[in-house]
Image (cartoon, rainbow over all chains, first blue to last red; front, side, top):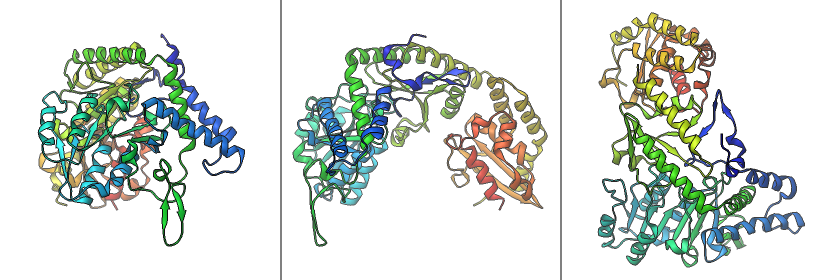
Length: 405
Length: 146
């Protein structure tokens, strides 16, 4: 088996599942972690575990500088204008929830909120809750027959006053990509706030928030080779400053008395409580990892693998692909005719192949496609031709078992 | 909840000897391909649950596929009928019924799904995190008998 220098950095990949080598193709759910991320977290706990931002002693100063250095790393990684535009959260879900809560006072009864039809529940339910709290109207942005966002329909929707538009950067189910730079321009020109769920893009595409031009961008550390339990909400500073904190308590205040509390400055006013320090430090190591590889080249190779996989899948008997386009990123959704997606997943699992089968936290998309669920295979930076070969071979065996009786 | 009459339970019970044979065949198979082929064939021995009984109220939650389960107590025996829209789960249900359909309350209480499926060589299918929901089905069967 060929093992590239990138793949060698991921200890988990080199193992057997029973008598089959692990073939990990569920990267859209979570990516694996390189050695340096695991070591960075281990190192933090062994050498400088202390709470950040408040200690008067050296250990805390070391932890605080390491923690804040990651904020600046992230600032550079996504090209944010200021470090305080980078708000640490526990993941994309928390980022979008704290944003939706924070916008309470921005949304008035009758306001319109548009949401991408491919949205993950994390980029739909918080807006639905916000709409219910504020008496606003939640509207789904239609898809074209190709399961892409219908830009003409969005344009028509934007002709009426709209407060906020929540988009996917990359669909977690289909892998389809929205042209955020173009969409954000139209959305902001229409006077609406443009929010982007970048959870599935951050590990697969260069993300430059200046070039994207949206107002908010959320992503998770664990989908970019970092640890679980840490994520980021990026926002334009003037807008971020108007958010009402969802969580209040320690770290986020300036002064507190029993009669009133004055909140602190950004980013801390949106980061109440002790942050996930080890995870932030692990995320910093994940950025080091990504900066250490030729990302353009890696992304190009991943893209070629994805296209090969699309073609090989489409050529198998009874397999239907959903919304599969050459410019998709990361994921492919499919079903086997007449068979339950769960059966496919269980039989692949017997052969060491890890994929996801279900509704993928996108029930409205499943409804729009008329499906109970589907299978999703998703690639990472370490995926290689062997993974594709093993997966296709295992899927052939699965098809024979299910249909060849 | 409205539920099927006794004759449908009897129809499931009629299959018991064949289901038990199928379970033995699964236990005897060595290769996973053979085990799963036999498991899915066992699923085909189950009578089809008529569409009117594929009710949401009878669905076992915690399964990725749809699983419907009904229970009837007859004298001191607990009868079940169940179905799923997925082949592997339907097969697992067939094996489960082979093990505990028509059991007494004492037998049900003593039934260990872990031991039973380990005997069949399918222990891996039982871990609680698995989306097939086999644990949820067994729990539901035991709860319905109480």
